[in-house]
Length: 483
Ligand code: SF4
Ligand code: FE
Image (tube, rainbow, N blue to C red; front, side, top):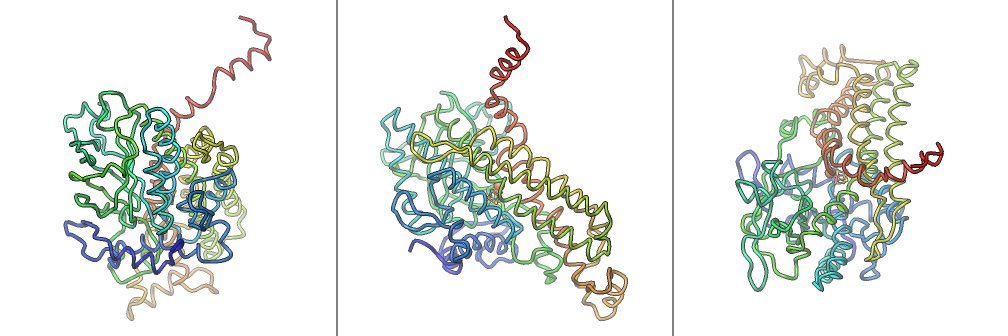
């Protein structure tokens, strides 16, 4: 089965024995939980679209490992065109879900681990690359969703992993056995872990010799013994329990993050991709972060398309679409959004093959892409709120609108142009609320800041990759400076 249908994906998730906690309780039926289900629907879209002939080029690829047709989310990029198609696919998914569809993390981890394991093996004669190819072949053949887990809780940011007062604040090896290792620690902000079959765990920072036990990368099933998840709260999350779907703004789709605990998890030798070769921890981090910073030039742009459309609809419904300042604000939103897309495409077009043969994005441009993502969605959100008006945060609930006694008043006094129902006007305002400050603000606004690394992480990479010395030489030559 090279490609699963959306329905098969949902049923496959039902079979997992995930340990999920939320509001202090263990969730027995993760798949049908009303708070969690929208995030599963977003991942499902990566399966549904792959079944549709019109999206075949973007959503599927030919496996470099088996020659079979696979979902692009499990693909190892073979060309700059593959890198470009990845970003276009992510924009499409953002447009269809207006949420984080989660499956990119595993794709980005796979491509980073593929090339890094090749280079570790070259230096040390290890077998990590073979381990990884075996894992990925299984992922491709079963069309699994894979999470990529990088971010450790990190405790005191001024101390290295081994120097923390609590040694578990970075995930590490606590026992070495002939047949594998036992790991303990946690991974924070885990997008999509709950909706994944497997996880690729990677270190979170570059490391030195003293951090040897922390330089560990591996894969395992998300329901492996010793793993459990604590779901993160989102603004307005319990609205999904109120029986008023309109108030959620996006009744069908969403995202989920969780704190994932690895409580003495056994990892067999053939699932290990890095084990103590400290100098390669930095390479794995840099490549994964680079790929995921490229990803934001696709997914956030797709969600931005929905927000821009919603703002333009709100202007129509308010009767102010023809005002010149409104038109100009919508142009500005589009300009910002397409600039992000331009960066995502540019870092893909200038990608290069790694030693292992897969394609890596241009790291400087990928970091510039993500740096812009830490800013532009905030301005797009500001403009959307400006255009939508204060009703975004003051409108009564759907339950009031449906109430036989007060509903008619809500309907009468919150009407905009007479050709549009109050209900539709409120729906679009709720969608804007959802994207700017509700559950999807995790996936659009604040994730734009911190997802794939906070802004300073990109600035460090820009300073490393920017080749300032070359630029000084250019200036000297033009000014005829001789030293
Ligand atoms: Fe994919 Fe974007 Fe979500 Fe990352 S934030 S997993 S790139 S949708
Ligand atoms: Fe993300």
